[in-house]
Amino acid sequence: MKISAFTKHLATMALVLGVAVGCATTQQQQAEQQCQGMSANVKAAISDAQAKNQDARAMGADWRGAAKLIGQAQDAGNNCDDQKAMRLARDAKMMAQESIDAYRKMEQEQQQAQKKSEEKQMPQNRSYTVERGDTLWGISGSSVGYNDPYEWPLIYRANADMINDPDLIYPGQDLTIEANPSSDAVDAAVKHAKNRGSWSLGVVEQSDKAYLNEWGK
Image (tube, rainbow, N blue to C red; front, top):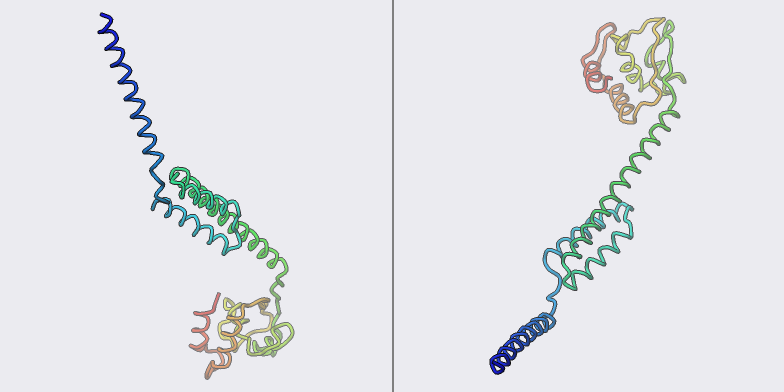
């Protein structure tokens, strides 16, 4: 009985030692395994974060916190901690995008504020009551107009609802003088005035109709 018990004890010890040796061997093998560097997935995630942060930097909206996270993600990736590296890269990309969104919102608000300010400062349209002997050419060339007679088509288009033939206006008509026409509108008006072609009183020329079709309000 004693020999049998001793034999069993030895067998049990051998089993325990075998397991212990096996665990030690496995741990040693794992320790001996060297990190093979950053995985492809981590590289792609970091690259996406870097690209997004570069977009933010180009706008002047980059935040150094994103760059710091990208550096930490690179360190984790080089140490084969893919889970941590992926999380840091995603956080960095998200922060860069949030910086871009915030910058765009700020720009939009500034543009809207500037537009409102300009609208408040913008001069109001003027009005002029036609007198006997007036012509659009003469009104446009005066101080109440544009100080340039060739800009008379601007008055024509602003009052097309009451002016049938721009060569024929009547005393008592209240004309609107647009205060701030765009440069393109001015150029088109002058071009039309200089290239209008032949005209006759009381008849709407085709060139006038074409001008209104393109530049009328």
